[in-house]
Length: 569
Ligand SMILES: Cc1ncc(C[n+]2csc(CCOP(=O)(O)OP(=O)(O)O)c2C)c(N)n1
Image (cartoon, rainbow, N blue to C red; front, top):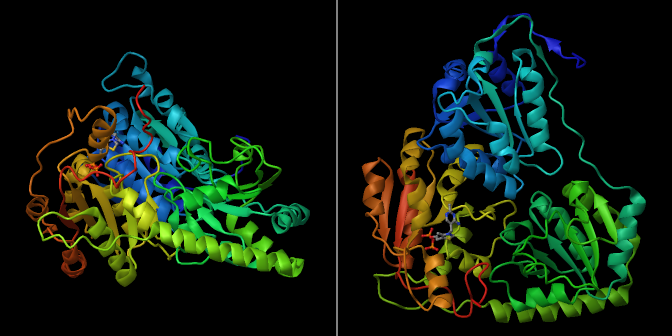
C-alpha cells in the first residue's frame, strides 16, 4: 500500500479496526440500531471506554441524532450513525438526505452481506453504494479488511473538509470477522482552513467601501463567525441579512441586523437585497427560499462570494470577486485590514443615517401584535411567540426548530442574539426536531435544549422519546398541537378551495404519553404557562414533552402562503 501508517502490533479483526479507526478520529458517540451484519461492531463497543453506543427505536432517529450532534459539536467531533444492511439502511435514508441538503457532516456506517454470497439477492441484500450516492459526498463499500482504517479515516476527512456533507461506508460482514496482522492506522489529519490572499481581501474591501448600497448576506457557513461579522459590519456600516433559518449568525438586536430572508421575510429585508449594488455573501448557498426562487438578487448587483468550497463559488451567481476561505478566519482577516483601510468619513455618515432609517422601518414592519388576550383553552401562535421570546431571554437555550407552521412566526418575530444557538431544519424533514435535539444535547450537555415541533412531525419519531429517557438525554420538546398537518391544510385552504383531505387526525394526550414512557409531560392551554412549565421540566431532570394545544384551523398569519406554494393554474 502506498500510504504510510503506523502498524499496530496486535492482530485485529475488521470490527476492532473499525472502532479503533473511529476512536483515533475522535468519534465519541455512535447512534444505531442492532442487526445481524453489525453484530461484531456492537460487540467491540461493549464496555468501550471512549465511544458510547446509543441504541434507538428507528434508524431515522440515529441519522437525525448524528446530524444534530455534528451541528452542535464544538471540537469537530463527528456524528456517526450505524445500521444493518438493506432495511436498516433504507430507514436511515431520510437523515442522510437531510444532512446532505444542509451541508452537515455525518458518517453512516452500514453492514452488508458477506462477499461470498453477494449478487444473489441474499437476505436483506441491497446495493448500498448506489442507494446512498445521491445523498452522500462519498459512498463506498470496503472490499478488503486491511483497508478498513485507511478508507474509514479518509471518509471522516471527506465528510468534514470543504463543504461538509455525509459519507456512507459499508463493510461486509465477513470483513468484520477477518483477522489482520499488524493493521495500519493513520494520523488524524485535518486541512488547515483556507484564507484568501491579502490582495483579494483588500480588493473585496475596496468594493464594499465604495458601494452605494452594500449588503452582507450571511449563511450557515458564518455560524462560528458571528463576532467577526459584527466587527466588519460595524467598521463599514453595512447592514446584514441572514439566510433562511440562520438567524443566529448575526445578533438580531444589533442596529445593523436587517432581517432574515426566506419564507415570511419582511419587505424591508427583501428590498435591501434587491436594491443592493454590492452583495457580500458569506457561507451561503443561495437557497431557493433565501433568494425567493432566485429572483431576489438582480443582474445589476455585483456579488462578492466567500465560501470554503470552490465548487460553490459561482454555482448560482457569478461573483465579481470569489473568495475561497473559512468564514471565521477570512472575516477576522478582513476586519483587521478594514481598521487600517480608512473608509471615507462622509460615506460612513451617510450609511449610518440610511441604516438608522431602515432599522426604524424594519422595526415598524416586524412589530409583533400584542398578545391576543384570549381565555385559556387554545394557544394562538401570536401569544406563543411572545412567550417563547421570554423563554429565550430568560433561559438562553439552544432552540431547535423542526418544520412546524409556527416556524414562520419564529422566523419573523423571534430575536436571537446568542451566536450558534438556533438550529433550523432547512431541508424540511418532518421528524427531525426530537432526534436532532437529542444529538445537540449530547454534544453540549451543559445547555438547555428546547425543540419546537409540529404534532405531525413529533408523532413520526415519538417512539424515540423512550431512547431519550433510557439514555438520560433531557431535551424539552414543545409540540405545537393543531391536530393536523397544518402546512398541507393551508395549501388545501388557499389553493384547493378548502377541500381538506388527509390533513386532520386525532392525537393521543402527548403529556400522558410522555409520562407513560417515564418522561415529563404537561399540557399547555395558555401561552403564559409556557415558561413555568419549562422551568418545571428542567427541574424534573427528565426529557419532557409540553403539549401546546392550538385551534386546528388557525393557519398562517394573514397574507402568508405556505412555503413553496404558487397559485394554481
Ligand atoms: C418526512 C416528510 N413528509 C412529508 C412532508 C410534507 N409536509 C411538509 S409540512 C407537513 C405538515 C407538517 O405537520 P406538522 O408537523 O403537524 O406541523 P404543522 O404544519 O401542523 O405546524 C407535511 C406533511 C415533509 N416535509 N417531510
